[in-house]
Image: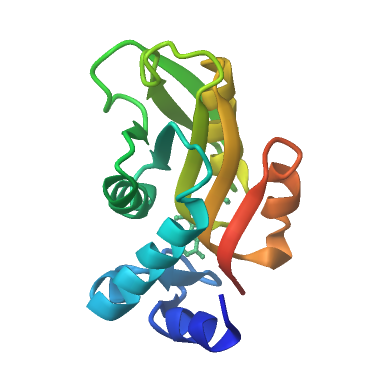
Length: 179
Ligand code: AMP
């Protein structure tokens, strides 16, 4: 993507200081979603990038990964798999714990999410990578189902936190924008 296109997309994302707590700059993608040109420009970019990647499933992380992941799934005519917070998925699940700044959280995936296909090629999607803990837990769930996470894709990488470096030990990492 060209520099001016990146600037256009980055300008469509609102930064809100001290949310959800003091010292955090929250990257609010609702302003990008609310901008029909910016949203479709982003999805078109991802369609071009991934249309020949032989992907079998797109997996999105709750909840903003659902928005971009399912929009891309529909365009690429690929099945979408939600990776959710605990207690939301009704079927039998695998769980993976990960660390937050304070305490721990869990992600879950349905055990039959990839229809028991061995080595299915999965693209993982979320809006943003910070420390990488969330995405690492999601990749581990994909791998425990004997699928192959071919890439983790983000709209935004907070690169000072080095989450992309941690995650790249498990899978290839792509982010459209970096701050
Ligand atoms: P992490 O596990 O630290 O990589 O955090 C990634 C998850 O937290 C993603 O699902 C993001 O949506 C969310 N997140 C973390 N930091 C921010 C931020 N500064 N602005 C918006 N969302 C964030």
